[in-house]
Length: 305
Length: 255
Picture 1 (cartoon, rainbow over the protein chains, first blue to last red):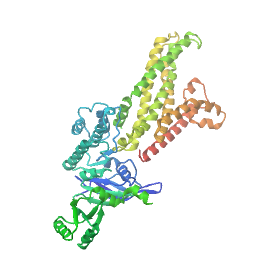
Picture 2: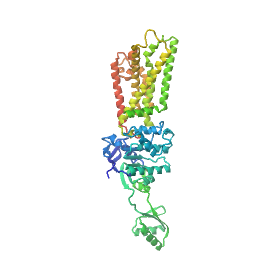
Picture 3: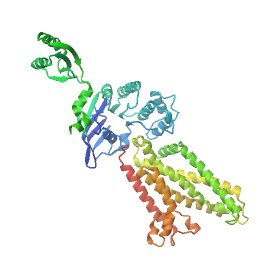
């Protein structure tokens, strides 16, 4: 598959400090890629460079084969952007706002504007002033302006900020729909890990300006079981003898065992006279993995220093 | 470019402030004319005639300048303070084009205010003042003089608003831009007069801002000629715009 967007050796230096260090990343059509990282890792800087708000120090961004460095206007004409809270002109109606942005793209007709308004379900209030809208309405309008010109690439920075649970769900389903039906490549940065987990096919993790991991969400995960038994020491001994890796977790132990091994395990525990309180499958959340990979983020780092 | 200007024009007129400005312009112009009439009735400034008034509409310049400066200062700065700059610059349009459209819109707005002010001015001149037997309104010389004075007084509007535009786009603060511009507008002539015996006064832009001085003869610094003034102003305008464009194009938008 040909990537829609390629970041090539992207670097950004601000006052001799390397904020982004040699970032390489490809984004594919029909895929939703999540962009994760602790605060200050360089997520926002990367996104701002991709949409033309900041200039890269080195490297290039290629969108559908067009380099942003060489041909900014053509490259960016395929990108739809929502940067944080979409700030609109509050003194104008939602429709006038859309008209304003439509004029800045080539070939967006009045019919297309009406279409998009219907898609995001705002027909009833589109002619009211944006100042009267709720945050959820503004987010919808933000989405509408990003979709006007039928972008091949949609880039979203903290898109679900301020949406209620129903709104988040609707938003997620909508993104999935346009990714699948129109083959749009979507790039989402968010702090809400559970959100990313539900939404994305693929996750890129950045720390200190470097890309530390890219993984597919569909990848089979290792299976873990949570076991609580006393005496704990003996249980641990038994498990390590059986060739499992064991780590303590809350009151019990976390074991990398497969489902079919569990009955035997329990049997051996009972045979050894252990008291078994709980045996349950344990799914490592993205949060656990994220914290493992990034070392607990900045607050933990600050304490360690 | 036309579409971008259409956008700027639309945004401008959707702000209540803009309509209030037009209102202020009409009221101030009318008030000024009323005052002139009153002075004329007291017979202090000599008899004022309809033709005399029409020939010198330059008093409009000050009001228009004040209002245009407010728009010029805010047109870039407000995009930053509203946060809409992010939405504006993530479009497939190069930044210099956006800035040009804003600059042209400011000047169009200045001209528009000038026109409105001029219409009000003419109407009141017709209503309030008696015609002088000597000169006739049908004579071309009265009107050409009138339009020439209007153009000269617009020069000041253009220069000061360009200054405000540059400050506003560099420092992203409309209040700073308005403050500085009006400070220069009000104190510029005093500074020029104080420095008038030194060579440097000739090269300060506020010495040349008021182009009507060549018609009224009230020169701030002796030995100035119109072409020289225009040349000095042109250099300053280019410098202001260069600074404004280069910072706007290079700026990393972080807010």
